[in-house]
Length: 179
Image 1 (cartoon, rainbow, N blue to C red):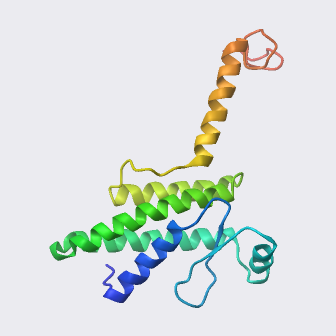
Image 2 (image 1 turned 180 degrees about the horizontal axis):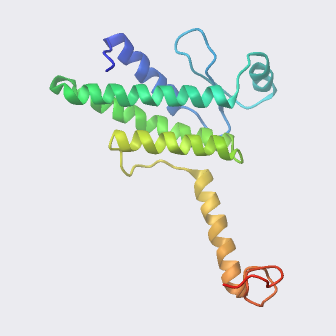
Image 3 (image 1 turned 90 degrees about the vertical axis):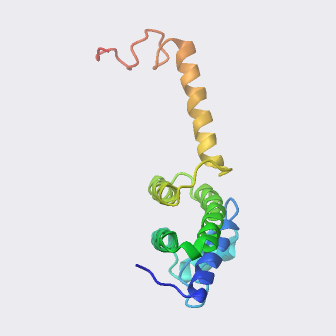
C-alpha cells in the first residue's frame, strides 16, 4: 500500500489539477525532471520542436497517465480504510473528475490514433470504476462526433435498403455471401 505524506498528496492533487486544464488540441509533456512532472503544451511549431528534441512521445505520455491513475486508485483505497481521511478521499474524486475531462480533451488531440485513444479509454474507465465515479459532465466531443457520424451512416444504409448502395439488400459488393 502507498503511505503518503501531506506533500505526496498535494503533488498527486496538483498533477490531477494540471490534467484538468488540458484543452482540445493541447499535448502534455511528461519528460520533466522538475516537479510537477507534467506540463501542458499548446499547439504550434514550438511544441513540435520541443517534443522532438526532448524525446517526448505518446508512449511515454500514456505510461505517465497509467502510473498517475494507479497512484490515484492506491491513495483512494488507502483513504477508504482510514475513517479520518474522508476529506482527502473526496478531494481525490473531485480532482480526478476534472482530470478525466482533461483526458477527454487530450484524446481529441490524437484523434485517429486508435491505440492512444483506446489506452486512454481503458485508463479512464478503470479509474472511474475503482473510484465509483458515475455520470458527470465528461464531455467527450470526439466520441460524440464519431457516434453521430456512425448513426448518420446507419441511417443512410437503412434508407438505401442495403449496405453496398446497389439496392439489392445483400450488404456485399458481389452478392456472394449469404446472410
